[in-house]
Length: 558
Image (cartoon, rainbow, N blue to C red; front, top):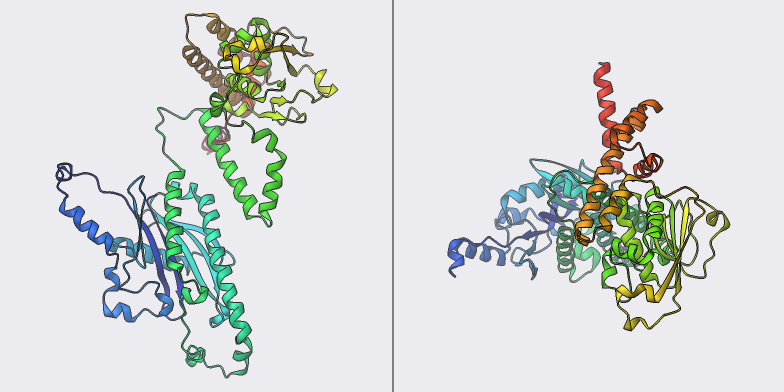
């Protein structure tokens, strides 16, 4: 991560000061001389400068004289701390000030602003500020207990300075979560020292019984108006510990988000996945930040643990042993043409698809194959559960064989049940390959739906043509399905804009459906598919569309 972490302190004598700073130095690019085995002189100078981290800003006697005990972390002769990442070759360097004069001024300004004007309500907590010229800052201010300070506490802040505003904002939940742990550790350690000192000599009673004079107030505390953080926490390896914490934070935050080259605009599936990841991070942050967050998070997790912890990652299905479905064509061959079409029709219409059997690996592989028929935003899956889950929670539900199906579900036309039972010709799994599922299991498909499934939708008709063509490989069929999904997702966007945003009537909507090619044979199924897929549109697209429409209306009114 191209950023810098600094611990700052508001000194009662000298104002805001930088106490400790950790920065990441990336390995230099290979020059022609270094490729031939001769190190460049600039690299040698950089190495020597990295090994001796003493800042030139601290070398003058004048600046050393202006630093009191509370303003100083490491002595001027201390070489600092260095950690090297063996994987990337990045060096993490820590000292009281940055190595480069340009960074020194940037960090100095961030320090002053974080401890003066840029504070949140209550003066404790995170805040974001900055600009393009001086960089952007994530700042977290906090208090440390001190029995000799004014108000019995001192003011500190941890600032993270970076030039990438978007990256820093996207990392807010991660940074807040881990910085809070470091700050809480410092506060709890200092609180123990504070309680111990107050037990020996209560300062409140001493101050109330002594004459108060602003001129001699610092001297009334035996010259300890500025105590170092080391003395406040009584931590012998405080700065080494902070170096490890800040170095890990820079490394973890840098590897947490990666850039991916996209050709063209991002698809709806990509936008939905990004939104879901953001929601999960925010939810995790809320659980951990709440009082008793650990126990609540555990309770929240245990409630859905059976459905999500067991085989929840589709990417791991191929690594699991035992029989499983590998593709839509494989599933069609096992179930039969008519049964597969019935099942795929229910999937595309948004009905609840229930698989009940004793092999959760087989059920999970079936869901992985069937979910490829839908946009990501339309998929709500519970891979395997010991109890029935309602349709509003999931449209893919795996159940153990002894779970009963409620009457209102079995009699509903908006659900389909696939029962898996052992075949009479069953044999040990170890001696059977993936293509021998038929010899192991029997599949029974039942539904209360009375509508014909052989007319539409058009997408399913085209897909079945591709699946029945043995000259097309599985990869070609997958790309064909991807193109069909993109085609119909574009139709969904047009219909959403026309009916939901513009609010057109039924006759106009019918004309748009005819223009989109959704009328004719299978029209009812096409309309149901479009309406169901409309629920899978990303929030980003909907918000962008509504903003654009409202902006156009304002410009027309003006």
